[in-house]
Image (cartoon, rainbow, N blue to C red; front, side):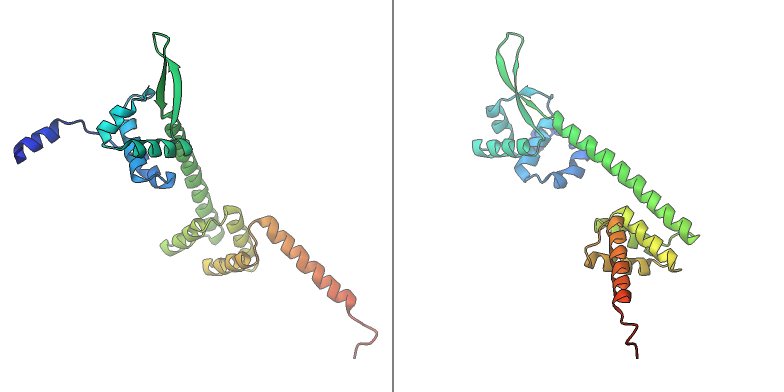
Length: 215
């Protein structure tokens, strides 16, 4: 076969499309190469297609073990299911259902939209408290807290602490969050509990002071 014949044959073969949602979610889903290839293949087929493993092996050049391993991984990830359904003649057939994948993608989109809204609200709160627009550097600092999985509630509690102390500075808030992290403080409730404990310790020190024998 010469190059022109090869290119002509290549152009006439089936082309599989890859959806953006798959590219975005593939890494998060923890798919290996074979399971990703299989998922792309299935997404380009009608849902609940008949599970013809010989045809899939032929199309994807998989070994039987590679296909079974990929099917198993996709099932474990709750992306794919094998269903038994009767055809028009009443005969049971194995069919591949990948509708679960779309449920996963939809859930992730909703979660991302919620996170985007929460982040905007967080930025707006800081700008309202500071009485000015945040700088690009300040946005980066807040984003760093979010990436470290520090909750919005704890970030706002640190902001409240800073404002109470008369400091409108993200570096100061960053230090507060760092110190709280070292002490295992993860929620505003933890902050309140820590303050109460400190107040109790101060009161105990006062009560234990021997005023009669004071020099």
